[in-house]
Length: 291
Image 1: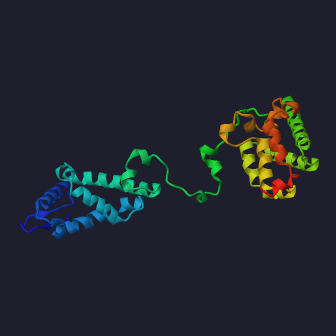
Image 2: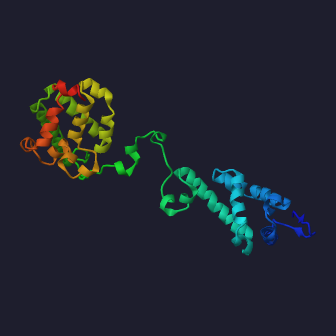
Image 3: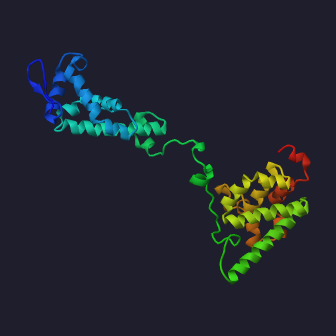
């Protein structure tokens, strides 16, 4: 046990709660600048730095940052009058260390990090910190198919498989025919629609297929399509990825609309669909130059 002798000859042991209380009271009632000039106060702060070094390290802080938090509590009335001053100080230092760590993660002040309004958020992240694109893990960008039994992506056994396959095959052929009717070269229309359909069947999810195809620059180059035309094709066939469009014709996509019963006559009455496919046609070179 470490003991210290004051000018009055009374021993002080600040390692115990009772000894710490007496020291804090003496420093509080002493002359101005007692904390700066008293040698026992300096030793107390060195002891506090070592005592809370492990706690500070746990939260990514320097031990003197924890000692600084302890110093703020030691000067308060709560520490001087507590039954267990060291217990009060330790609890306060732990809370301060947590707040310091949260403030560093949230990029805000320690005062704000102590408030539930801010502390409930996750730490700030750069988009580049993750290998996967933002749309793969942020729920705000997730698209839920309104038809969980989408025949295009189902893989049942027996007769159901035959019906799903037949329906999907027919939808692909109808989509190719619609593109060709609206100004697309037949070979390009077939290549584009069949590639999107095969990727959808391989991946099994319209959302994931959309993201994969959107970044597929190699296929776009082979089809000789501009970035704008390629994105229009994907949106037209698979549907708009924004959840706000999920229940609309634009959100369902051409393939799903064909599978669930719409025919070419009905689709040709959709002015927005007709305009989108026509304007995206690669034969419109004046538009490709603007994309």
